[in-house]
Length: 366
Image (tube, rainbow, N blue to C red; front, side, top):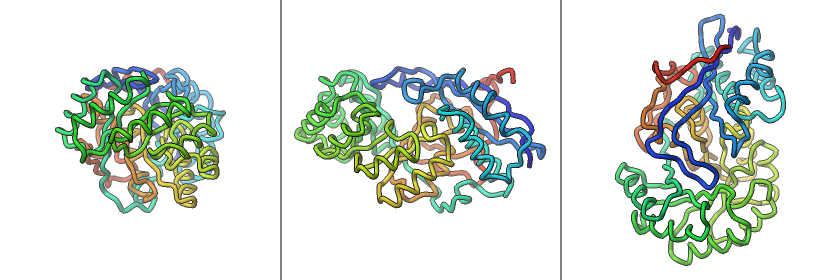
């Protein structure tokens, strides 16, 4: 199976409600879709969202990196020479992690198809189902309380609540959410780098003093402030998860060795795809640090790849793969089934993706 052509398109799908964090507000998923075509007729699918405030990647940057750096290295290569071709993707220029992630997952898709096995089984996975949380965007407290009640009514028992847009309001936001959903619903929060270390400790301990019973806080301080992250981890009553601080296996190792966080969040778009995500998970196993599998605002092609990984690694104990259920439509055919919080992995060879419904994907001139 030889790679003969790379085709790119732009997938667009509306969200149910605007997605608001301390960093941005988004109304639609607007992702780059990668198709790796082969001489056997098999097609491998990948996807990458332009998440400039986090990864630095724009749509034009993703497209340019694939066409100018990655495609020349892959065209004509045999998929079965798998270690070599995945290494070529990671070596194709610096950064551009979202572009690399999209192509890397498409290669894993092809490799599974070549050997007629689902990717999660290729990785040794036994799990068939996952349970995800759902994100509650930053809004006034009463709106967040309503959104939380609606999520629980849809069957969710774990909420990831965005905070940090206005630190003075954060405790009031969480108190409103906790009152709305009661004591039995799990609440984890994500500050998206919004606080200083001392501010984070003060706010988090105040939240626990008020009985908000938070499971964890994700990325309370700026990504580059490893010392500040460690300070919060040592002094906060709420366990700390590193997210934007972990882009690579090397970043993860620094977190583990410094004991700078209690958990890490693996996202394919940050680390460059499944190949590096597996390395982060392996390092986490060595250090005994549990992981979350997360996503950006991605449609099902990219989130499906994360599902395959999560089904294969027990060190991944928490799941934040709500991208497809945040959309008002799922235009992607095949792959995992998303029934609100319950995700069931596909047993089709590779990733099981068959394509995108007409009207949601516009091909770029490649």
